[in-house]
Length: 631
Image 1 (cartoon, rainbow, N blue to C red):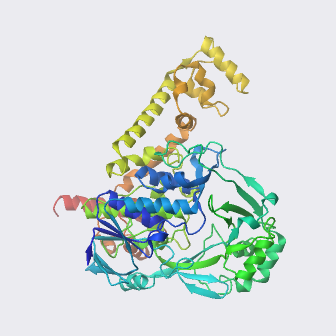
Image 2 (cartoon, one colour):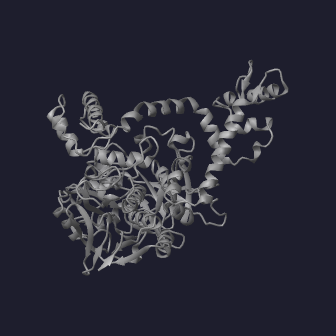
Image 3 (cartoon, rainbow, N blue to C red):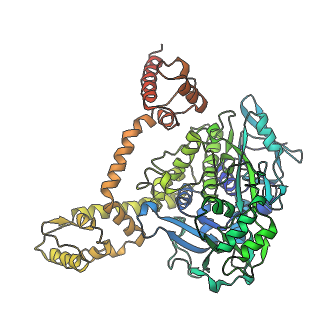
């Protein structure tokens, strides 16, 4: 018998963040994992970030999480995606050294106070009434606990497929978590199946890179973490390479499609739409003559490469044929074949917006068990589940991020309000307020919470406060600096404008108005004023963005304010929807099933009409008045 305040099941990206944050918030925490050697394992591609995902990493970091720091310390290539576009859609991505990343996370876990790692298999969640009280393991251990975070990844009823060959397991060479799935079903949870997959790994010495396009790292890599002052000059960076499938590749796949687990009927689970297998690509995009394949290094000392773009569940001999039909891979040898994997999922609509299950208090779910795909989505959920598990132990109100303030808020609101019928992946297009929730200001938006929970030091927080004070001060200064066309400053400004194909000013204008012009950059105007050269590029970029997009940002802020009132209208847990006249039976059933916490959340449930929301709003106001009056 052992006793903890929080138990985290799983040691992947969700489990690591959940365990670390719970321990850092003062909870006696246990991490239950099959093996200490696989803590922090990058199961699929050795990369962090990407479109919509880099924002998640930055937000996790600003809350006090670890994924951003790990990416910075172990990155071997850094790139800013959509760099030519506005800040609202820019996303950071890095290739990590798979081995170093795992070593980094294992060291952090091993040295974290209040955190104990237990090598065992979780088999049964114990409850008293509707409250979690403990966990049983395969080795016969009973752990008493107030909260449990399940972050089982693909291990919950995991089954790996390679052609007709099926193996129980959550990852190559590792067992599946069957008894835990049975335990969750006994608690009343329905377990569905989703499908994901991975490509074969290739021996670098057998690859002809001369036939491929080289993709280098950014010259000045930008770190993920606000706590990383910069990527060291001596941190070795490696290029990636780009090749493509051919008509021969597609012919091989078509000829063997009957052996694909997805198309033979062997797998009935729903696959990842935005990261499809090569079989899916050939079937669904039959008009395309080729598809990109990105050759990504697994590490500085590794001889393996990850061919991103040819995830497959076809038999090993077919995979070899596919690989060798691709330019540069004619003589490539596989070090490990790819495979498809189906795993258990619990509908995320079973969760509150703080990731606690509706059925059992103290039970939190995070990561792929909630129907998501990707390291970053998992880490974000792990962070929020860990925070809320700790807050529950402390008897405090749960922590919920709104859609208007974070990508994490959008991710969790989408899952818990709308659910998902396919593996969910984050994109910038999912975020309505992306002009406000950007990568570059994640620290401004999130660090106040990290500081409040004791996850960010006073020194780190004050540095962020100082940074944004400097930005605000400079924006005010630009708005106050008035230029007359006839003055020496005006003549200097006009020379700059004409030199950059911009029309000269003919009326008095402030520098912020001039800076709004698309062709004008902040650096062009800095010679007019003293002291501004001391500002860092990071600060300058944010100043420029805030000024150029000021009108659009103000419009989004007004939109947020318009809907804020319904987000703040709470729905009592004991509400009887059947007693509300004017709402259809179908909508009553939906509201009862989803049990939204606020009117805003009810408004986002698919099929709940605006008229039903209006009726519900009037009813809630009447109910509130009656309860305040003691009726």
